[in-house]
Image (cartoon, rainbow, N blue to C red; front, top):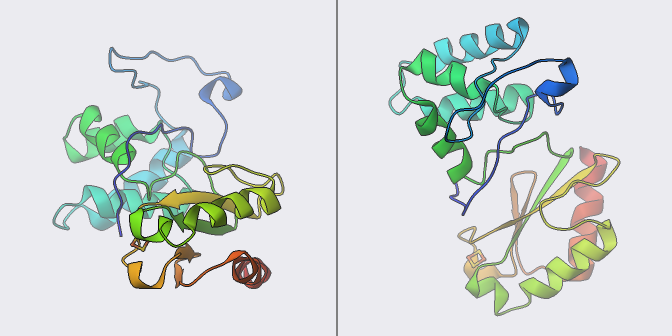
Length: 192
Ligand code: FES
């Protein structure tokens, strides 16, 4: 499910900025980088585009495929995608930052999304968030230093009657409390 968010940024595919590779580049008046990805990355991106370009609304499946390939959607690929699809960089950037499913940097091996929408809040979502932040030692939107878990929030997983709800590695869990969340995290991290 693609979920909109209020804002976001897109960074490099491999988690290192362009400056790390000694590159120079320019930025347009909307803040979009004009640097392109390294040749090897560009080749893989073009292959992803070629595999999906005939699909209706190809940009979304292409972005999902790029995230699956690289672990995130790199700002460096935005100009290349725009050129390949003959759309503006602003259009690509807008989609990347609109949907919460697209990460700005590679996530942890276990992806945890706690629902903070109204129905889940009414049955203890905030307590669950506070517990998760405390036991993991990170805040929402962060990844544990060992790269094992990324903790995020979502706003409704369609599991409202079974709140508090969470999605962990794509699996839906309901009726969570701190103890049950600990069990879920232990099980999911052991498997990932
Ligand atoms: S409000 Fe949490 S699943 Fe709908």
